[in-house]
Image (cartoon, one colour):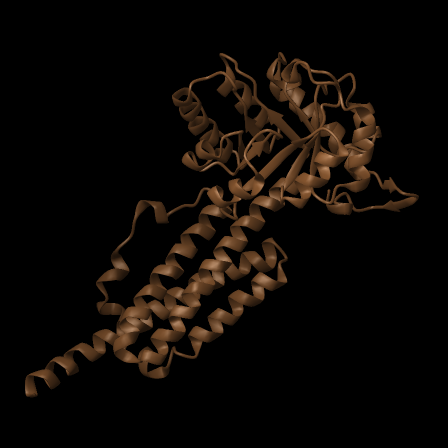
Amino acid sequence: MGNTDSRSQFAQPALYRILDANLDRAREGLRVIEEWCRFGLNHSRLTEQCKHLRQTLAQWHTSELRAARNTPDDPGTDLTHPQEASRDSIEDVLQANFCRVEEALRVLEEYGKVYSSEMATAVKQVRYHVYTIESSLMSYQKHQRLRQSLLYLVTAPSDNLFAIVEAALQGGLTLVQYRDKQADDSVRLTTAQKLCQICHDYGALFIVNDRPDIALAVNADGVHLGQQDIPTELARQLLGPQKIIGRSTTNSDELHRAIAEGADYIGVGPVYETPTKAGKAAAGLEYVRYAADHSPVPWFAIGGIDSTNIHDVLSAGAQRASVVRAVMQAEQPTLATQYFLAQLNQRNRKPIARNGQTSEDPWDNGQ
């Protein structure tokens, strides 16, 4: 019995130090996440959730645990890793801190079982809430970038594919879809991996055409589906809630069905006949006007759009456009991208006249 008491006396300070250190770590990580929700996203619900979790943990961070702190003799204070010295993006900061919080909460849950079963149960619930916040925040980030993207480049096979896409990204492009109907799966996978990395290096969203499996394999931001591809619900099951799912539409019935099935954005077209959609009749500007009045989700006019007709498309109500040849076959993809973005940005700075009403909000009606 004496040995047991001796071991307990020796273990208690270590236990308290573990709990103190990980309560600090979890609360600090939550504060980093909370600040971005508050100042970066202006998202009151996510901000409040982070604050509530911090306060829940603070109730367990007692003076008894704080008193066990021994920073000068802590060997962990000198440990570091090169990846901790810098972050490439806000997303990296958030991901690193979510990992930090979740690891700390797991430690608190396990050692908390020795200290207080009530604490262990409370921390377990906090951990589950953090997972939910992580999913919501990352999904919100992607969808916010989608809403802010005005130009959408859909690639076509090219010997200079990577150079063309990077040149367009240098021109300010923020949304790219990899489309190649003919290549073998092994080629598509390798190409998608490289394109995904290039896009993410520039902070752009990367979408894979038709293939949720390839999108999942390369950690793409989403998938674009045609009318003959798998249902949106199945794609969502495969990819999860954080990924973006788009759907091509050619008429009002397809538009409303895509929205009802949960598409995050839709393609509206082809506005003009195009070899990309050989044999498919143009939907025309009338369908663009219909989408402008009826789509509650972001939509991109697509099909044969180039510098000679972009103004007609914008005049019909489009605020976003998708191009293929106009950039992929341009002599200077960077300049071509900048031209289209300039036209789209100018269009979105103007008040939007719709159904006899005018709005100054470029995202009015969900667009």
